[in-house]
Length: 223
Image (cartoon, rainbow, N blue to C red):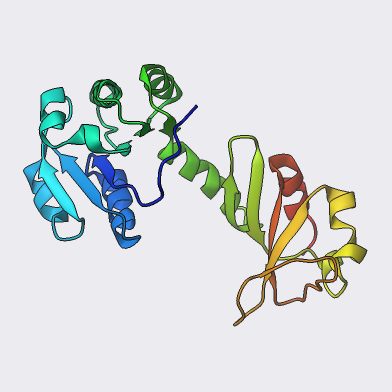
């Protein structure tokens, strides 16, 4: 079982490529304390003003990790992806240092399996996930798409014609298509959770949830 971590725990980010830098920068924006490390002095200097703390270090060396106090972190992100060997070694070092929660970037399914076996709690496939998301968006049916591990999907889309102008209970969305309208976004108004008596208009966007296949079928309806 993964240990529950406080939401304000400092985060160690290893690797300041595009993925690691984006992760560290967003964590910093969310006011989380971040220590970002990379073996490249140029990348460390580039991000030194945008991230709480940056340090040049080779995380493949466990002694270097000890020197920066890596064992004191509750959460670490291994954002190194160009070298599978390096990412696996770094993940193993963090496991040896007993970092409770380790997120590791994988570039392939086999890479991800190795990371999980050496002790990564969460394996991330940013390129694959981004590719899948774009595939759903380029069809023009959806405006945003998130799929979770158990095939559960959240999607933002324009409402099909048959649910416009009637309340959701009367439209029969859930019984006919096995999807749930979670919320509605009207132009110039804040997002609101959908209820049985919510009426969707021609100008609204809807947030729906369901399985991938059910969402795809619902998204293909006439708009």
